[in-house]
Amino acid sequence: MKEPWEMRRASLHDRDALAALCEAAVAPDDYVIDRLEDLILLGVVQIALDGERIVGMMHYAPAIDGSGWLRAARTHPDYQRRGVATALLGSFVGLGARSGVRALRLWSSAANVAGSASANASGFREVARFSRMKRKTVKGSDRGARISFTTELVQEILESPILRRAGGYVPYDRAFIALTPATIHLLANSGALYRVAGGVVVLSPRPEREAETSQDFGLAAGDPAKVLGGIAAARVRGVESVEVYLPFDRSVLDAAARAGFEPESWGQEAVLFERTLDVRPVSYRQRRTYAEIAAGKREGYAALGLLAGKHDHAPGGPHEDRWNR
Image 1 (cartoon, rainbow, N blue to C red):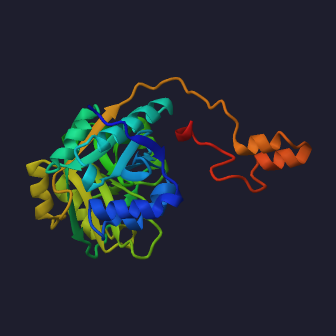
Image 2 (image 1 turned 135 degrees about the horizontal axis):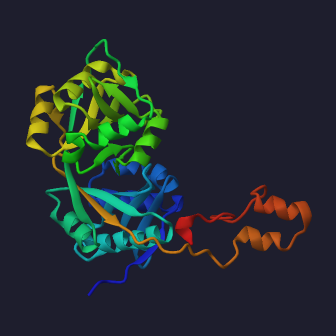
Image 3 (image 1 turned 90 degrees about the horizontal axis):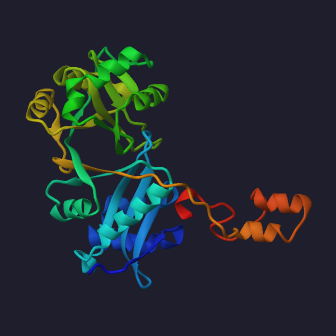
């Protein structure tokens, strides 16, 4: 019998409790701890509660292709194998369907049997496998050229053998996205597509932090050996190293090794899961926000000012986003 965990969205007030959860679930140096504020503010952190105790968490962020990316799943050791992760996944399925998200994706290590079981139990299916690899850049003359959108570009990418080996997905901006004509158009307009060594690579945006000296990218088209060797010498965006998720295919991984790439300590065999959603009619909230109640007691510009956020209001208002209906 599944336990009825209470679910709610985390706020910054939960930051310390979430840090304690990460420390217990992973280690004191869990990378998620330093990013908790960003995760809470950028996207949705859903938490599972046993009474007042936070026993699990998971983060959602929208991807450029209209899907939702799930990550940072943590369950307290005392509550593992009790359906916490499955319940969190289920809550996002419901929220996503009501919010017009047509697919949710996540990845897990092939060695993480429990994680894969939770994904399968929540209706996710495996769609591809990848291996994360990295190498230092070297000086070269070819810096790569940004690509504009054309119908010929779409055909080149969608018919490329490397994309077929990846199931049609590439890594982009800390998520995996499906390459469709619409997505290719969005990537080209955002300046993410580059021509390198005759192939096409997808460059992820880099956080504006000095410590970020590496560039994440994905292969969209071209000969893997040539493109991987080319990007290592391209010094794209002036970084010291490049990192990539490659299809978990022996010929591709061998080509990467010949180009000087080495496996990362994590993500050596990453399983990409996806669940498509039946989008439901959008349901809007019926109860008024704090600002609307306060505005109803005033008239004229004072009321408009409250609704526009010109005055103080209670935490969480005056707006409510689509994940809090």
